[in-house]
Image (tube, rainbow, N blue to C red; front, side):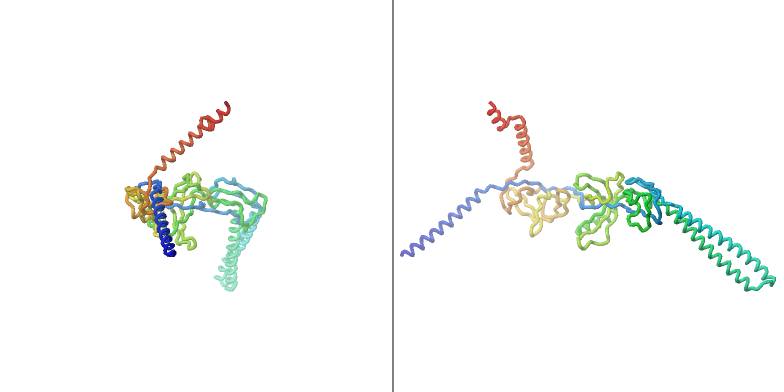
Amino acid sequence: MCWGLVVALALGGGWWWRQHAAADAAGQRRAAPPAAVGVAAAQRQNVPLQISALGTVNSTYTVTVRSRVDGQLDKLHFEEGQPVKQGQLLAELDPRPFQAALAQAEGQLLRDQALLQNAQLDLNRYRQLLEQNSIAKQQVDTQAALVRQYQGTVKLDQGAVDNARLQLSYSRVTAPVSGRAGLRQVDPGNIVHASDANGLVVITQTQPINVLFSVPEVSLGPVLRASRAKPGLAVEAWDRDNRNKLADGALLAIDNQLNTSTGTVNLKARFANADEALFPNQFVNVRLSLGEQENAVTVPAAAVQLGKAGSYVYTVNADSSVSLNKISAGARVGDIVIVEQGLQPGQRVVVDGLDKLRDGAKVTVVDRAAQNRQAAQGAGKNGRHKRDGSGPAGKRRASAAQ
């Protein structure tokens, strides 16, 4: 009897506890206020398609100017950091050793030319005597061979003269390309060698100038299609903060293979750089334009979430509840995302307050912009009160002073 009473009391207590807990949970659900969210409407608009990337500025030509001959550096004829033109005289080496070598080669040439001339005259005489049977044919043949020998010697001498003249010209170092000269690598008075690694100066061509950047493999298809449809796609170069546009250019080349380690392909753009806003080895933000997608459905990028099943957004229904909508997200352009499928223009999507949302949850739509304006106005009033003493703290200070 006692055990039956104990069991009955235990069962009754358990049933009462479950009913009480369920009632508390239901009360909590009823008491939980709707989540405050910010919303934006999906819009249909023409969207310029762009690919953003980080690029590096590269000069069109980078040339280390070296002396082609060994010698003492006499003079430099350029200013560091200043533009130079192709063919402009940059430096002079001591020309005297090369002038002496040229004079020696020219003297050797004159001597051998005289020997050749004399041998040719003798050959002509021997041939006349041979016609009169006054000389052996062997002697004529020997003289003819001597003439050919001197002809070869004269040709060798002429080559030596040309080489000596060329070496003398190398004592004057000229700019191989137009561009901007860097800092000089050697001072006048030093002995320079053709094998010097640093050379005399480095010239970089900055007008025009190139920017190298890479795009992911998934973007290669759109880039190739747009490039075939319109060669020379527009490219913009922006500063590192992405605030100021530095230059406008055009796509010059697409590499012929992907980088397997990064999954990207390299692209090169060319800029006129008339104002020299781009500098070699500078880092810039690149925007490659692929044209325009017409009548695209767009939403703010903040509305698009990524889950296990793909991209989705929360849409606000007429009864102030939200629904989880799976979408097919396209390209992101700035602060908006193109929605390929899953959303219609005019549908309201949640852009703020997404953290605790669930499918079917009730929400209250608030104007975040208005709240921010009110907060800013309140902060301004508090600041004025602090300055003029009209706020609570100022009034307390005034009372204490009295």
